[in-house]
Amino acid sequence: MSKNQLKGTSVAVIGAGISGLSCATQLKALGYQVQLYEKSRGVSGRMSTRNEDNWTVDHGAQYFTARDPLFIDELNNWIDAEVAASWNPHLKVFKNNQWQDSTSNENRYVGIPAMNSPSKYLAKNLPLALNQTIDQITYYQDKWYLHSLEQGDIEQRYDWLVLALPAPQSMSLAKSIDKSIERLATQANMQGCWTVMASFTENLNLPFDAAFINDEIISWISRNNSKPNRMGLETWIIHANAQWSQEWIELGKDEAAKLILDCAKRLGLDCHKAKISIHRWRYASGHTNPPPGFSLQEDLKIGFCGDWLNGGRVEGAWLSGYKLASQIESVKN
Ligand SMILES: Cc1cc2nc3c(=O)[nH]c(=O)nc-3n(C[C@H](O)[C@H](O)[C@H](O)COP(=O)(O)OP(=O)(O)OC[C@H]3O[C@@H](n4cnc5c(N)ncnc54)[C@H](O)[C@@H]3O)c2cc1C
Image 1 (cartoon, protein in one colour):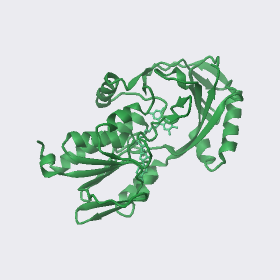
Image 2: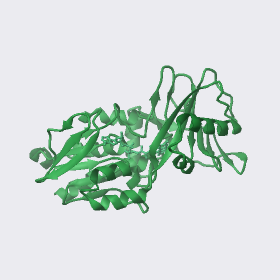
Image 3: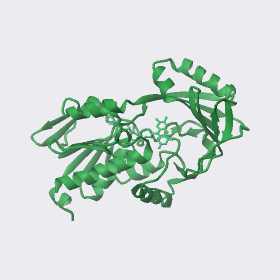
């Protein structure tokens, strides 16, 4: 039995995106008593999948890369567990008004059968409370107390607290307790993303599976069914670029969809026969530069992890959670 198990050191992790799940998994492996709280009805945050009657689509993260040896090991676990696989789309680039084949030889990976599958796999082994929006945190006499919108005061108190949330949400919870987080979170300057999903009853005959788009309001188009193990109707996903999305984040959904679909049509993706859904991500991307990896206030026993502290993206988020857990262990001993 580890020292943490003997002492029963407890940690609450707020947010069950990939950074929170990674942090909680590592803390549990180190012997801590971990409890995750998540405001949504499922895990995975922005590494997400929308399910409708006869189609599913990854409407957040599109794919991920693996460069760090720690994350490559984790990816190999996911591949062995059949919750991730490589994705080799026919990839094009639209630039200077011209289409070119992509020259990128990046290895790209996706969750299977859906982008949220690796998170579900990690969550299986963790104590998790869903539909719990933590809206107040208090540090009193060496213990953390939580309050949730849905439940009110949470009875359990914790020795340590981890916030695995996007920068603005971390800031609003913690700024009165930890002043340094306000400065860091402001630097991250997180931006939104308008996302359109289009499902078709017939397969489209486009000369690519996915495309990076430059100099337009759209930055990415992809055919969800080109990813491994996808079922259901042919579905395409369109992301507006970060700058345009942020500028027009308060636009009505119909108006935003119209502008994005007009642009998609000019690029060859005609969606007039498709069933359309639109999603507004308020905090899609953005990170501090240089990336600190995570943030830890030892005296207050509060830590922060997430993509915004480690370069953005899935790999950075997973590593941020893992490294924060290791740091908690090293300062505690
Ligand atoms: C449109 C889009 C496209 C992207 N494309 C890519 C890509 O192609 N490749 C890539 O690598 N990355 C991509 N990303 C980024 C990637 O999704 C993120 O880097 C990663 O998923 C972030 O994980 P996280 O754990 O840091 O945060 P999140 O996934 O945001 O997790 C935070 C969790 O906290 C929960 N939460 C928030 N507030 C509270 C609260 N008060 N109480 C309880 N729970 C709360 C949220 O519901 C969420 O589940 C994309 C993101 C978006 C939105």
